[in-house]
Image 1 (cartoon, rainbow, N blue to C red):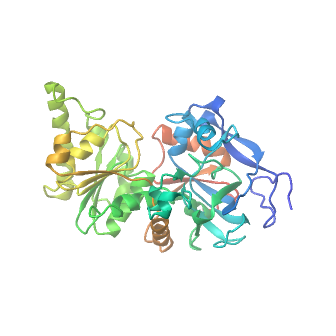
Image 2 (cartoon, one colour):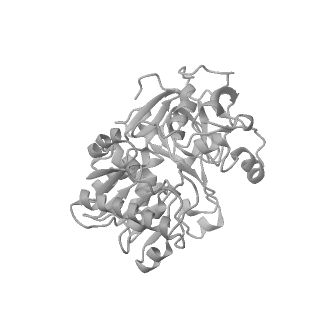
Image 3 (cartoon, one colour):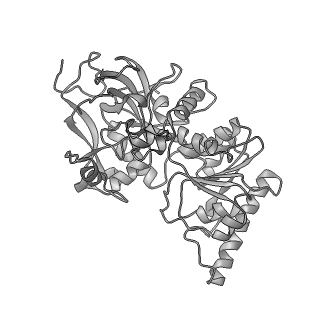
Length: 411
Protein backbone atom coordinates (compact mmCIF):
# COMPACT_ATOMS: atom_id res chain seq x y z
CA UNK A 1 0.00 0.00 0.00
CA UNK A 2 1.33 3.43 -0.93
CA UNK A 3 0.36 7.05 -0.52
CA UNK A 4 1.88 10.24 -1.87
CA UNK A 5 3.58 11.88 1.14
CA UNK A 6 3.53 12.00 4.93
CA UNK A 7 4.41 15.19 6.76
CA UNK A 8 7.48 15.15 8.99
CA UNK A 9 6.62 13.85 12.43
CA UNK A 10 3.56 12.01 11.07
CA UNK A 11 4.35 8.31 11.06
CA UNK A 12 2.51 6.20 8.48
CA UNK A 13 1.06 2.84 9.46
CA UNK A 14 3.75 0.17 9.73
CA UNK A 15 4.62 -1.17 6.30
CA UNK A 16 2.93 1.66 4.38
CA UNK A 17 5.54 3.10 2.00
CA UNK A 18 4.72 6.48 0.45
CA UNK A 19 5.73 7.38 -3.08
CA UNK A 20 7.54 10.52 -1.93
CA UNK A 21 9.42 11.76 1.12
CA UNK A 22 11.08 14.83 2.57
CA UNK A 23 14.87 14.87 2.42
CA UNK A 24 17.72 17.31 3.00
CA UNK A 25 19.28 17.37 -0.46
CA UNK A 26 22.55 18.60 -2.00
CA UNK A 27 22.62 19.42 -5.71
CA UNK A 28 25.73 20.27 -7.76
CA UNK A 29 24.44 23.75 -8.67
CA UNK A 30 24.41 24.55 -4.93
CA UNK A 31 27.86 23.22 -4.01
CA UNK A 32 29.43 25.50 -1.42
CA UNK A 33 29.13 26.16 2.29
CA UNK A 34 26.76 23.66 3.96
CA UNK A 35 24.13 26.20 5.07
CA UNK A 36 23.49 27.00 1.39
CA UNK A 37 24.12 23.57 -0.14
CA UNK A 38 21.51 21.64 1.89
CA UNK A 39 17.81 22.23 1.19
CA UNK A 40 14.74 20.28 2.25
CA UNK A 41 12.96 18.92 -0.82
CA UNK A 42 10.30 16.39 -1.71
CA UNK A 43 11.89 13.46 -3.59
CA UNK A 44 10.87 9.90 -4.54
CA UNK A 45 11.28 7.18 -1.93
CA UNK A 46 14.14 5.00 -3.22
CA UNK A 47 13.40 1.44 -4.29
CA UNK A 48 14.50 -1.50 -2.14
CA UNK A 49 16.61 -4.17 -3.81
CA UNK A 50 17.58 -7.71 -2.90
CA UNK A 51 19.26 -7.90 0.51
CA UNK A 52 18.23 -4.34 1.32
CA UNK A 53 16.03 -2.76 3.98
CA UNK A 54 13.94 0.41 3.95
CA UNK A 55 14.30 2.19 7.30
CA UNK A 56 11.99 4.90 8.63
CA UNK A 57 14.57 7.36 9.95
CA UNK A 58 13.86 8.61 13.46
CA UNK A 59 17.11 10.52 13.96
CA UNK A 60 20.32 11.05 12.00
CA UNK A 61 23.91 11.73 13.04
CA UNK A 62 25.96 14.62 11.64
CA UNK A 63 29.55 14.03 10.49
CA UNK A 64 32.26 15.81 8.54
CA UNK A 65 31.99 13.67 5.41
CA UNK A 66 28.90 15.57 4.29
CA UNK A 67 30.70 18.87 4.75
CA UNK A 68 32.91 17.59 1.91
CA UNK A 69 29.80 16.48 -0.01
CA UNK A 70 28.28 19.96 0.27
CA UNK A 71 31.48 21.63 -0.93
CA UNK A 72 31.81 19.28 -3.90
CA UNK A 73 35.45 18.88 -2.85
CA UNK A 74 37.72 16.99 -2.78
CA UNK A 75 35.23 14.72 -4.57
CA UNK A 76 32.08 15.63 -6.47
CA UNK A 77 30.04 12.72 -5.11
CA UNK A 78 27.23 13.08 -7.66
CA UNK A 79 29.67 12.98 -10.59
CA UNK A 80 31.65 10.17 -8.94
CA UNK A 81 28.58 7.94 -8.66
CA UNK A 82 27.59 8.74 -12.22
CA UNK A 83 31.00 7.48 -13.39
CA UNK A 84 31.39 4.49 -11.06
CA UNK A 85 27.84 3.30 -10.53
CA UNK A 86 25.96 4.66 -13.54
CA UNK A 87 23.65 6.56 -11.19
CA UNK A 88 21.35 8.98 -12.99
CA UNK A 89 19.80 10.81 -10.05
CA UNK A 90 21.31 14.29 -10.03
CA UNK A 91 21.42 14.90 -6.30
CA UNK A 92 22.94 13.64 -3.08
CA UNK A 93 21.02 12.58 0.02
CA UNK A 94 23.68 12.29 2.68
CA UNK A 95 23.84 11.02 6.22
CA UNK A 96 26.04 8.14 7.37
CA UNK A 97 24.43 7.10 10.65
CA UNK A 98 20.88 6.75 11.86
CA UNK A 99 18.39 5.20 14.21
CA UNK A 100 15.00 4.10 12.98
CA UNK A 101 12.40 1.43 12.36
CA UNK A 102 12.60 -1.31 9.75
CA UNK A 103 9.76 -0.46 7.35
CA UNK A 104 10.00 -2.88 4.43
CA UNK A 105 12.27 -5.71 3.30
CA UNK A 106 13.88 -6.60 0.02
CA UNK A 107 14.06 -10.15 -1.28
CA UNK A 108 16.25 -12.48 0.77
CA UNK A 109 16.35 -10.42 3.97
CA UNK A 110 16.17 -12.73 7.02
CA UNK A 111 18.02 -11.11 9.94
CA UNK A 112 15.61 -8.23 10.59
CA UNK A 113 11.84 -7.91 10.51
CA UNK A 114 9.41 -5.08 9.80
CA UNK A 115 8.97 -3.08 13.00
CA UNK A 116 12.45 -3.74 14.44
CA UNK A 117 14.15 -0.77 16.09
CA UNK A 118 17.67 -0.51 14.68
CA UNK A 119 20.86 1.52 14.59
CA UNK A 120 22.42 1.75 11.14
CA UNK A 121 26.17 1.37 10.68
CA UNK A 122 28.03 3.57 8.27
CA UNK A 123 29.79 1.48 5.60
CA UNK A 124 28.54 -0.71 2.77
CA UNK A 125 30.34 -3.39 0.77
CA UNK A 126 29.63 -6.11 -1.78
CA UNK A 127 29.42 -9.39 0.11
CA UNK A 128 30.05 -11.28 -3.13
CA UNK A 129 33.27 -9.40 -3.96
CA UNK A 130 36.29 -11.62 -4.58
CA UNK A 131 38.42 -10.18 -1.76
CA UNK A 132 35.71 -10.78 0.85
CA UNK A 133 35.19 -14.32 -0.44
CA UNK A 134 38.94 -14.86 -0.02
CA UNK A 135 38.74 -13.81 3.63
CA UNK A 136 39.37 -10.05 3.67
CA UNK A 137 38.07 -8.01 6.58
CA UNK A 138 34.87 -6.58 5.10
CA UNK A 139 35.74 -2.97 5.89
CA UNK A 140 39.02 -3.40 3.98
CA UNK A 141 37.33 -4.72 0.84
CA UNK A 142 37.91 -2.85 -2.41
CA UNK A 143 34.12 -2.67 -2.69
CA UNK A 144 33.71 -0.70 0.54
CA UNK A 145 31.82 2.61 0.37
CA UNK A 146 30.81 5.12 3.03
CA UNK A 147 27.01 4.96 3.15
CA UNK A 148 25.43 8.38 2.72
CA UNK A 149 28.62 9.83 1.27
CA UNK A 150 30.02 7.59 -1.45
CA UNK A 151 26.65 5.86 -1.78
CA UNK A 152 23.33 7.69 -1.97
CA UNK A 153 20.05 7.67 -0.03
CA UNK A 154 21.53 8.25 3.42
CA UNK A 155 19.87 9.22 6.67
CA UNK A 156 18.94 12.87 5.97
CA UNK A 157 15.49 11.81 4.80
CA UNK A 158 12.28 10.28 6.08
CA UNK A 159 13.32 6.92 4.60
CA UNK A 160 16.72 5.41 3.79
CA UNK A 161 17.78 2.28 1.94
CA UNK A 162 20.47 0.22 3.67
CA UNK A 163 21.95 -3.24 3.34
CA UNK A 164 20.63 -5.84 5.77
CA UNK A 165 23.96 -6.24 7.60
CA UNK A 166 24.02 -2.51 8.45
CA UNK A 167 21.11 -2.95 10.87
CA UNK A 168 22.08 -3.43 14.52
CA UNK A 169 19.55 -3.85 17.35
CA UNK A 170 18.91 -0.54 19.11
CA UNK A 171 19.40 -0.93 22.87
CA UNK A 172 16.09 -0.20 24.57
CA UNK A 173 17.89 2.09 27.03
CA UNK A 174 18.74 4.58 24.27
CA UNK A 175 16.52 7.31 22.89
CA UNK A 176 16.35 7.85 19.13
CA UNK A 177 18.78 10.75 19.02
CA UNK A 178 21.26 9.06 21.37
CA UNK A 179 21.20 5.96 19.17
CA UNK A 180 21.85 8.01 16.02
CA UNK A 181 24.79 9.98 17.38
CA UNK A 182 27.66 7.53 17.94
CA UNK A 183 27.69 4.85 15.24
CA UNK A 184 30.26 6.57 13.04
CA UNK A 185 32.59 8.13 15.59
CA UNK A 186 32.39 5.34 18.19
CA UNK A 187 33.40 2.37 16.00
CA UNK A 188 35.95 4.51 14.14
CA UNK A 189 37.72 5.42 17.39
CA UNK A 190 37.36 1.86 18.69
CA UNK A 191 39.13 0.38 15.67
CA UNK A 192 41.84 3.04 15.79
CA UNK A 193 42.60 2.24 19.42
CA UNK A 194 41.90 -1.49 19.54
CA UNK A 195 42.16 -2.85 16.01
CA UNK A 196 45.82 -2.57 15.00
CA UNK A 197 47.79 -5.18 16.94
CA UNK A 198 50.23 -5.04 18.57
CA UNK A 199 49.63 -1.27 18.83
CA UNK A 200 46.47 -1.38 20.91
CA UNK A 201 45.73 0.50 24.14
CA UNK A 202 47.12 -1.32 27.16
CA UNK A 203 46.78 -0.36 30.83
CA UNK A 204 48.94 2.66 31.59
CA UNK A 205 49.52 3.62 27.95
CA UNK A 206 49.53 7.38 27.27
CA UNK A 207 47.28 8.19 24.28
CA UNK A 208 47.25 11.58 22.56
CA UNK A 209 43.83 12.44 21.11
CA UNK A 210 43.39 15.30 18.64
CA UNK A 211 40.06 17.12 18.77
CA UNK A 212 39.30 15.73 22.20
CA UNK A 213 35.97 17.54 22.52
CA UNK A 214 34.70 16.50 19.10
CA UNK A 215 32.64 13.42 18.36
CA UNK A 216 35.59 11.17 17.58
CA UNK A 217 37.69 12.53 20.42
CA UNK A 218 34.87 12.21 22.95
CA UNK A 219 34.55 8.52 22.16
CA UNK A 220 38.32 7.98 22.06
CA UNK A 221 38.85 9.48 25.53
CA UNK A 222 36.31 7.09 27.01
CA UNK A 223 37.54 4.00 25.14
CA UNK A 224 41.11 4.72 26.24
CA UNK A 225 39.95 4.93 29.87
CA UNK A 226 37.88 1.75 29.57
CA UNK A 227 41.04 -0.09 28.49
CA UNK A 228 43.15 1.39 31.27
CA UNK A 229 45.02 3.93 29.14
CA UNK A 230 45.75 7.55 29.99
CA UNK A 231 44.13 9.95 27.47
CA UNK A 232 45.62 13.39 26.81
CA UNK A 233 43.23 15.55 24.76
CA UNK A 234 44.06 18.39 22.39
CA UNK A 235 41.43 21.15 22.15
CA UNK A 236 41.10 24.47 20.34
CA UNK A 237 39.22 26.36 23.05
CA UNK A 238 39.52 26.41 26.82
CA UNK A 239 35.73 26.15 27.07
CA UNK A 240 36.08 22.54 25.88
CA UNK A 241 38.44 21.49 28.67
CA UNK A 242 35.74 20.60 31.19
CA UNK A 243 34.03 18.28 28.70
CA UNK A 244 37.25 16.33 28.12
CA UNK A 245 38.05 16.07 31.81
CA UNK A 246 34.53 14.86 32.57
CA UNK A 247 34.99 12.02 30.07
CA UNK A 248 38.26 10.95 31.69
CA UNK A 249 41.09 12.90 30.07
CA UNK A 250 44.16 13.21 32.30
CA UNK A 251 44.62 16.73 30.97
CA UNK A 252 44.25 18.91 27.90
CA UNK A 253 46.48 20.97 25.60
CA UNK A 254 45.16 24.05 23.80
CA UNK A 255 46.67 23.91 20.31
CA UNK A 256 46.12 27.66 19.82
CA UNK A 257 48.98 28.24 22.26
CA UNK A 258 51.38 26.96 19.59
CA UNK A 259 52.33 28.38 16.22
CA UNK A 260 53.90 25.57 14.22
CA UNK A 261 50.85 24.00 12.58
CA UNK A 262 50.73 23.27 8.87
CA UNK A 263 53.17 21.82 6.35
CA UNK A 264 56.51 20.63 7.71
CA UNK A 265 59.39 22.93 6.68
CA UNK A 266 62.21 21.31 4.76
CA UNK A 267 65.44 20.46 6.57
CA UNK A 268 67.31 22.72 4.14
CA UNK A 269 65.53 25.75 5.66
CA UNK A 270 67.44 25.78 8.95
CA UNK A 271 65.67 28.79 10.46
CA UNK A 272 62.15 27.53 9.81
CA UNK A 273 63.09 23.99 10.76
CA UNK A 274 64.57 25.08 14.09
CA UNK A 275 61.52 27.23 14.87
CA UNK A 276 59.23 24.29 14.12
CA UNK A 277 61.28 21.96 16.31
CA UNK A 278 61.20 24.41 19.22
CA UNK A 279 57.39 24.53 19.15
CA UNK A 280 57.05 20.77 18.69
CA UNK A 281 59.28 20.13 21.70
CA UNK A 282 57.30 22.64 23.75
CA UNK A 283 54.12 20.77 22.77
CA UNK A 284 55.70 17.47 23.83
CA UNK A 285 56.75 18.98 27.16
CA UNK A 286 53.10 19.76 27.91
CA UNK A 287 52.32 16.07 27.49
CA UNK A 288 55.03 15.30 30.07
CA UNK A 289 53.55 17.86 32.44
CA UNK A 290 50.12 16.25 32.22
CA UNK A 291 51.47 12.72 32.70
CA UNK A 292 53.86 13.75 35.48
CA UNK A 293 56.68 11.86 33.77
CA UNK A 294 58.80 12.04 30.62
CA UNK A 295 56.54 9.62 28.76
CA UNK A 296 55.55 9.77 25.12
CA UNK A 297 52.18 8.67 23.67
CA UNK A 298 52.10 5.00 22.71
CA UNK A 299 49.24 5.82 20.34
CA UNK A 300 48.34 9.13 18.70
CA UNK A 301 44.76 9.25 17.44
CA UNK A 302 44.76 11.48 14.35
CA UNK A 303 42.10 12.82 12.03
CA UNK A 304 43.05 16.43 11.36
CA UNK A 305 45.91 15.48 9.04
CA UNK A 306 47.94 18.17 7.31
CA UNK A 307 48.21 20.67 10.16
CA UNK A 308 49.08 18.20 12.90
CA UNK A 309 50.58 15.01 11.44
CA UNK A 310 54.22 16.21 11.60
CA UNK A 311 53.84 16.90 15.33
CA UNK A 312 52.03 13.61 15.91
CA UNK A 313 54.88 11.66 14.38
CA UNK A 314 57.47 13.64 16.33
CA UNK A 315 55.90 13.18 19.80
CA UNK A 316 54.85 9.54 19.31
CA UNK A 317 56.82 7.05 21.40
CA UNK A 318 59.53 4.80 19.93
CA UNK A 319 57.72 1.76 18.59
CA UNK A 320 54.42 3.59 18.95
CA UNK A 321 51.72 4.29 16.39
CA UNK A 322 50.09 7.31 14.79
CA UNK A 323 46.70 6.09 13.53
CA UNK A 324 44.75 8.37 11.21
CA UNK A 325 41.19 8.25 9.88
CA UNK A 326 40.76 11.59 8.13
CA UNK A 327 42.20 14.90 7.02
CA UNK A 328 39.95 17.74 8.12
CA UNK A 329 42.82 20.28 7.95
CA UNK A 330 44.09 19.00 4.58
CA UNK A 331 45.24 15.84 2.83
CA UNK A 332 48.98 16.45 2.49
CA UNK A 333 50.68 14.45 5.23
CA UNK A 334 54.27 15.57 5.82
CA UNK A 335 56.46 13.22 7.85
CA UNK A 336 60.11 13.55 8.82
CA UNK A 337 61.14 10.05 7.84
CA UNK A 338 64.09 10.05 10.23
CA UNK A 339 61.70 9.78 13.17
CA UNK A 340 59.61 7.17 11.39
CA UNK A 341 62.36 4.69 10.57
CA UNK A 342 65.00 5.35 13.23
CA UNK A 343 62.49 5.26 16.09
CA UNK A 344 60.58 2.42 14.40
CA UNK A 345 57.24 4.18 14.63
CA UNK A 346 54.12 3.16 12.77
CA UNK A 347 51.87 5.35 10.63
CA UNK A 348 48.60 3.48 10.22
CA UNK A 349 45.55 4.39 8.15
CA UNK A 350 42.22 3.34 9.64
CA UNK A 351 38.80 3.53 8.00
CA UNK A 352 35.66 2.95 10.09
CA UNK A 353 35.14 -0.55 11.56
CA UNK A 354 33.82 -4.01 10.83
CA UNK A 355 30.48 -5.37 12.04
CA UNK A 356 31.96 -7.06 15.11
CA UNK A 357 33.56 -3.79 16.23
CA UNK A 358 30.31 -1.90 15.59
CA UNK A 359 28.37 -4.39 17.70
CA UNK A 360 30.94 -4.18 20.51
CA UNK A 361 30.62 -0.40 20.64
CA UNK A 362 26.81 -0.62 20.55
CA UNK A 363 26.96 -3.01 23.51
CA UNK A 364 29.17 -0.63 25.51
CA UNK A 365 26.80 2.28 24.84
CA UNK A 366 23.77 0.16 25.69
CA UNK A 367 25.41 -0.78 29.00
CA UNK A 368 26.03 2.93 29.65
CA UNK A 369 29.76 2.26 29.90
CA UNK A 370 30.27 4.54 26.90
CA UNK A 371 28.46 7.88 26.75
CA UNK A 372 27.27 8.77 23.20
CA UNK A 373 27.90 12.43 24.12
CA UNK A 374 24.82 13.62 22.27
CA UNK A 375 24.24 17.20 21.18
CA UNK A 376 20.91 17.64 19.38
CA UNK A 377 20.96 20.29 16.68
CA UNK A 378 17.29 20.37 15.73
CA UNK A 379 15.33 18.70 12.95
CA UNK A 380 15.72 17.81 9.27
CA UNK A 381 15.60 21.48 8.32
CA UNK A 382 18.68 22.12 10.47
CA UNK A 383 21.00 19.67 8.66
CA UNK A 384 22.77 22.45 6.77
CA UNK A 385 23.22 24.55 9.91
CA UNK A 386 24.69 21.60 11.81
CA UNK A 387 27.22 20.91 9.06
CA UNK A 388 28.09 24.61 8.92
CA UNK A 389 29.10 24.41 12.58
CA UNK A 390 31.47 21.55 11.72
CA UNK A 391 32.82 23.46 8.71
CA UNK A 392 33.61 26.49 10.89
CA UNK A 393 34.83 24.36 13.83
CA UNK A 394 32.15 25.94 16.04
CA UNK A 395 30.25 22.77 16.92
CA UNK A 396 29.42 22.08 20.57
CA UNK A 397 31.34 19.27 22.28
CA UNK A 398 30.36 15.70 21.53
CA UNK A 399 28.36 14.06 18.75
CA UNK A 400 25.71 15.91 16.75
CA UNK A 401 22.33 14.56 15.65
CA UNK A 402 19.05 15.83 14.25
CA UNK A 403 15.56 14.43 14.73
CA UNK A 404 13.79 13.37 11.52
CA UNK A 405 10.58 11.43 12.16
CA UNK A 406 11.00 11.33 15.94
CA UNK A 407 8.90 13.82 17.86
CA UNK A 408 10.68 16.91 19.22
CA UNK A 409 12.21 16.13 22.59
CA UNK A 410 12.77 12.46 21.73
CA UNK A 411 16.37 12.50 22.92
